[in-house]
Length: 169
Image (cartoon, rainbow, N blue to C red; front, side, top):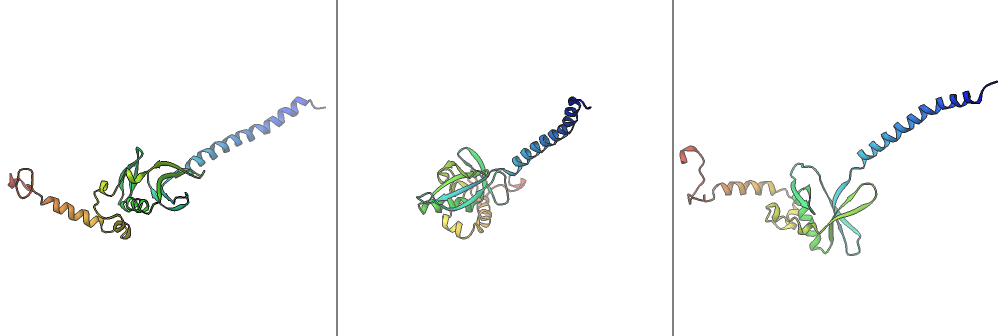
């Protein structure tokens, strides 16, 4: 005849590894979910009724051809064409906001980004529709020409050119 305590001890011996395995699976799933659910940030355009019109992704890290901007006190990286798009959307009577999605739907986090960053703030004097239509392709050449032009500007001393070598001193 077996004692009931020994049966319980055997069953607990099987439950223990299962509990450990379940705990490890829960921890792994939580870490994986945190990795997968990194929020995406977008400038979202909506019409007067709140319907989605369009969007441009904005980034947490610098990338090629991107400029650092601040919306509602938070730093993002955007292409100049994104700022141009924002200006055009507002001109078209749409509402643009910074929104994010972390798997639970879109959440607005910043209103009126068009008032916080403009093409002029980025040093671009072109019309927003022109920048948008050309996808900003000419901006690098414009900036290169501006740098060349600036090198020939009058110095503060009134000389007609900047000192370029030690011979100019």
